[in-house]
Image (cartoon, rainbow, N blue to C red; front, top):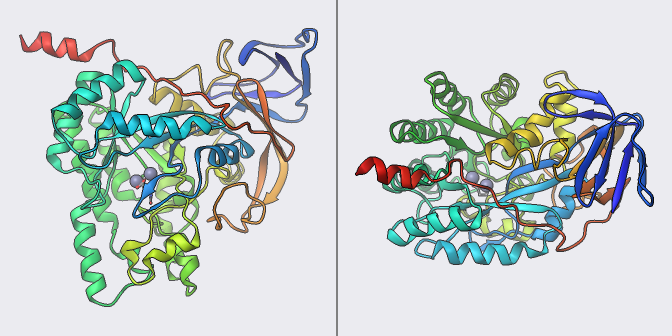
Amino acid sequence: MSTLIRGGTLVSAEQTWVADILCVDGKIAAVGPSLEAPTGATIIDAGGQYVMPGGIDPHTHMQLPFMGTVASEDFYTGTAAAMAGGTTSIIDFVIPDPEQSILDAYKTWRGWAEKSAADYGFHVAITWWDESVRADMGTLVREEGINSFKHFMAYKGAIMADDELLYNSFTRSLELGAMPTVHAENGELVFQLQKKLIEEGITGPEGHPLSRPPAAEGEAANRALRFAEVIGVPLYIVHVSTSDALDEIKRAKAAGQRVYGEVLAGHLMIDESVYQNPDWDTAAAHVMSPPFRSPEHQAALWKGLQGGALQTTATDHCCFCADQKGMGKDNFAQIPNGTAGVEDRMSVLWTHGVGTGRLTMNEFVAATSANAAKIFNIYPRKGSLQIGADADLVIWDPAATKTISVKTHHQNVDYNIFEGMPVTGLASHTFSRGELTWVDGDLRAVKGAGKYIKRPAFSADFEALARQIAK
Ligand code: URP
Ligand code: ZN
Ligand code: ZN
């Protein structure tokens, strides 16, 4: 099966140039001027538009069982919505219950993801520790293509990683050549503040940001970075939402640490005033962690992205409908945490990044796909326009406009945090390994067409090396 994309302006993380792209059997087969169309090839005219690598969202939670309910978006609906916005791959999270075998949990998530329309990989959360977890981390890296392990420093009493767990898992990650990642918030501080606020009678969504102050994020980011520094392992911090955490990243980078920061489209665009909305449902719809912050933090995050201290953009797509959010009607700490965005990330970032001059088009590609592919070791198969890469592509119409709305989005959730936001720059065509999945408003995503992406470790065998050194 071949497709020739003609007359577009190609935009990669490195360069911008006018060329055709020929896709054959799911791969990019040729890139150049005036390419010949093979017999039977589909020809797509991309004149006046940009052709870029499809987006990679490195942080999603499809159908996550969380806080007593299950996220409303499954792997099919969520990845189909992603395609409508130009995102062609996701990296989701396996989150084992404490004491649950991490291999069993991994197999469960692999089963759920079989209906995915887009290609997908997994970070695996380390939520508890014993020798079986240590051994299973090795199996996941060597046999299953997992190269990143997640640590939730928040969510006390559920999945929180304490310092001992961080030490054990970071050390094991180093042995295996895997990347530790953290949700950086001091879970004890959050827990105590939640208790105090509830006792004081603050039970609504306005209590949520009060219980998760910026300092709680800064402290956890610093602690995780210091552990990484002492252990000598790289670190990826998910959903950086404050200048407090950003400053810690900058300090660690300046000291020579290999550290990466991710920012969410939501944290860039939405501020904490949403929690003051007198309509409970609307305020609760924005409850996610870390919470939306003040405009000063948002400005710092944009600068972090522009200046390179933050490398990736994600959504933390984790959908809960109003009836699910209602579980926390009497206690904000019981509102399921999470918001959507996988469909809107690319257009929001184009509009407010490229459209405002904050990002060049090449920086946009770096921030929406190439950097995630490089950090998680799937570049240039994903996130590039190189010959031999997967033909995950988006044809981007820079003149197309829409107003984001729950009424028209494809996400399986009854609220959109970007509701009413006008965007300029939209995916006109999305290709997943050469197959058209979105054509001018026609969603053709195919249930089960997505493939699991194995991600190799960052070294051949760090563990063998470590054993040798220990002898
Ligand atoms: O509120 C959020 N972010 N929910 C999903 C779990 C997490 O912390 O990433
Ligand atoms: Zn998180
Ligand atoms: Zn998350």
